[in-house]
Length: 126
Image (spheres, rainbow, N blue to C red):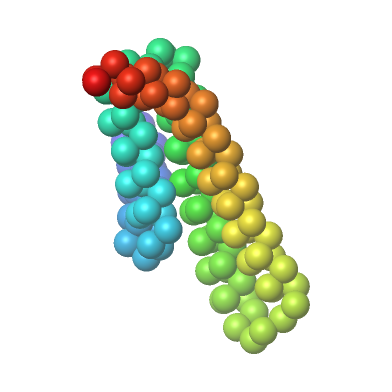
């Protein structure tokens, strides 16, 4: 049983090492995390529902997950194909494009969920 628990601990260690690598080396991931945290602060201030929280948290996670996958694709391609190749460029561009789509969608989610209650609060602060 101890061997299994050590394997699980090691798995978590490597997973956290990957997250740390992403945040340490990728400026966009740090920006996305900061925006996500700001959205969470806004959600707390605005008192969004549990379902809205689920959508916001999932959206933040999706953007960060795709940023991590984009970084993994770039690292693997740089290792496998250090020379410039059209397919390597296409793979990197595709991965980056998927992050862009998720980021645009996350802005839409933020506006749809946080926009109306924010507008309401700001109009009643006068």
